[in-house]
Length: 141
Ligand code: PH2
Ligand code: MG
Ligand code: MG
Image (tube, rainbow, N blue to C red; front, side, top):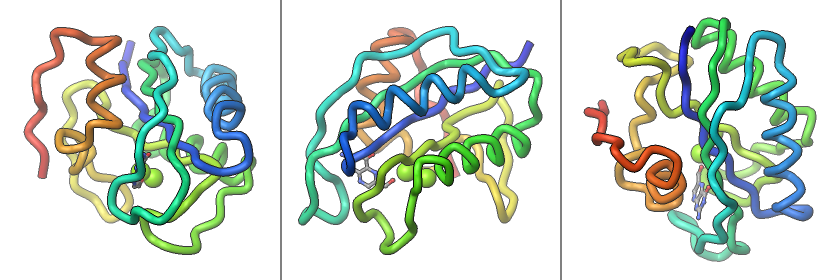
């Protein structure tokens, strides 16, 4: 079975509900099951600062989907939750980022694995280390 880690973030329209709904939707993707789920963390915005705090979490799933099919399923969840792409790093109802998929290293137009900024982002690493205390930093692009 394949294992993937996904980070979730929201800072619009009841962020806690948005993150919980996205986790339930990930678990409902055919061929996906959420095996581990971090706590929900309230975090200060990183990058663009003039926006509300975020709720962040990380889940670990097992999946029969390929990385690209999983990415597309996550993008569909973002669409279902009315994600708008107005500005880079700006406020959003939900962001579902594929962090890693097995040990795959990939650099395509659509998807880079591991996620290139995961190591430097505390809002990713804190929830990730909660569910995987022995996590070793992955080499990123
Ligand atoms: N996501 C970003 C940019 N900044 N800051 C926090 N605290 N949480 C996020 O999820 C986040 C961010 C771009 O994806
Ligand atoms: Mg993101
Ligand atoms: Mg994203």
